[in-house]
Length: 213
Image (tube, rainbow, N blue to C red; front, side, top):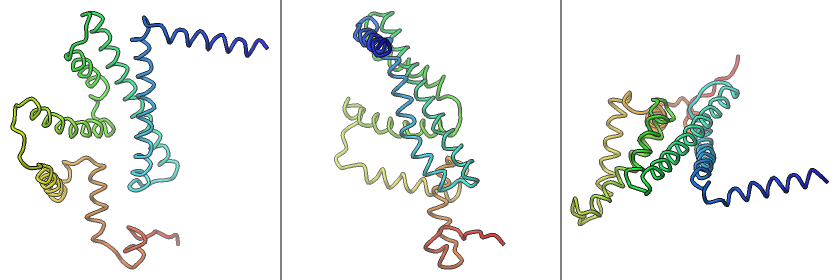
């Protein structure tokens, strides 16, 4: 009976601690670390699974190892960034006694430099993903604040035209400038479709299957 009673006591103590307002900022940092780790794993694992089995060669063990490594790296980095960002935000607010817009910017700058400043494939993908989003957001903010006039027509068709025109031009003539995963995807779509030998690698497989002698 001592076991269940002890567990109930521990849970009561923990839940009571979680309700304490004076610990809220520190606890929010801890939960932010948890959420960063979970979210990073949830979005990286399926992406790594698909990309690895589509484009990576090697044994099943090597592929699984690559998937786990990518998932761990993304999960760890996002968890560490959220921990750093929320911790520095809370620290600045405590020092100055109020929350300022500059706190968010400075905390994220430090976290970005410490966590996402290492130039690797995972960080490159995350940073470029965010870049496209903030360019959209800054464009909307510029219109909202009156820095540029609101477009009279939807600019999205022009945006799509330029994006696809530029990326395919880069892929065909300067492919080394594109990220490796994007190169792999485009090779599969635009170059691999130029090669076949018979019906098997025309419709069933992308490339002819290698059979043992």
